[in-house]
Amino acid sequence: MPILTTLEELYKFGPGPSSSHTMGPMIAGYNFYKLACQLSLEELSRATELKIELLGSLSATGKGHGTDRAVLAGVLGKTPDNCDPRFLDELAQERCKKHALDIKSFHANLSVDDVVYGPTVGKFPHPNTMRFAAFRNGELLECVRAFSIGGGSVRFETDSPDEEAEFYPEKNL
Image (cartoon, rainbow, N blue to C red; front, top):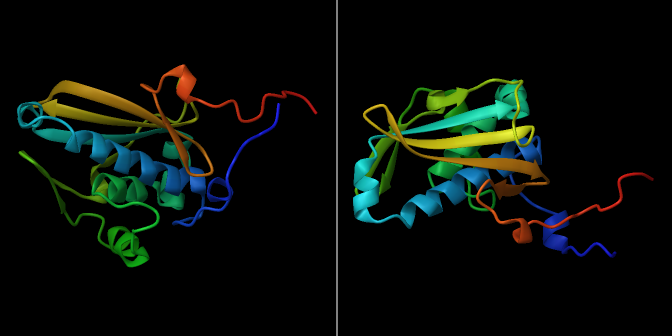
């Protein structure tokens, strides 16, 4: 079976040092942002808090790779191709500084310190797992898990199997 891909999939531009620990989380955060933008005013008005959690490998090495600031930048509407590197530097230097997230009726102020480093070991669907959760007064309303599968590519738990490609069907060389 031939492997079908494009040059855009092979050569991606964005923040580093690791596409699976920076670009992937930024794209996942941005996709979560887009998903939230599609919610109705009624749905958004129920949420009072947003929590972003890094799990597995993203939690273990996230501080050194800048995963926390990359995923936050994505949630704030940035993508690898439009995020000014100075913004990521600012996030790193001013970890406590709050940044406004305004989506219709939902308003939150988020900082890099709001990104939670969860367990590094556990039964995660993928080693690079992120969890985006919305709460109302401490009660979980909605939770979405995303996986940074490498090369800046992302899958969500809700993706149907026919949306996933088997990139390398051979298991042995």
